[in-house]
Length: 232
Image (cartoon, rainbow, N blue to C red; front, side, top):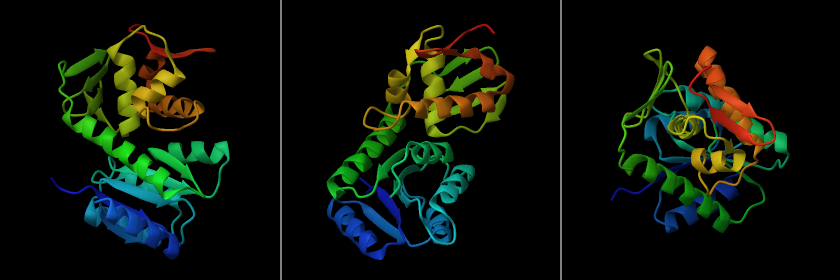
């Protein structure tokens, strides 16, 4: 079985070395970059499975690197774990808005970081190997193709992040059902991900924007969460 490829984008060379050593010891195929521009180049060349991305990088910030990678076809589905010395709620939300899959605040233990990497690994494996009994789900002009991992609106392909796709899949699979934010975090981001419940609001906002007028199918339930209605 091919080793999981991990790209470390971290300008602190001492910390990068520690991560490199520990990840190699755990059996990962590890690459490194030391600034944002090099990180983007390495991601395009190596197409890693997971990127450990520092927020505070020279040349191009980690936030901008994340946004850039999510826009490129070849890198948009890579799992991104963002590292930052900042611990404010807004910084975490900004990271998820940029397209990060998970978020770890410095200082952190290598053991905790490894567990978060493995959690991303498990989610990618499940997404790639799950047997799909129903290939397509539809609501109005929205069509979710589960086998191809694609979303169409009136037969026009929409670009979706992995989390947005999983979130829409959860809602459209059970139209009319009310989901609280905790349930949506588990289904869209994975039960191993430690995030704020407000993060789901960010994903819903992005999802509605991409769906345009059809975004009105997603109803906000004050004090509860969200549901997807079959009629506007």
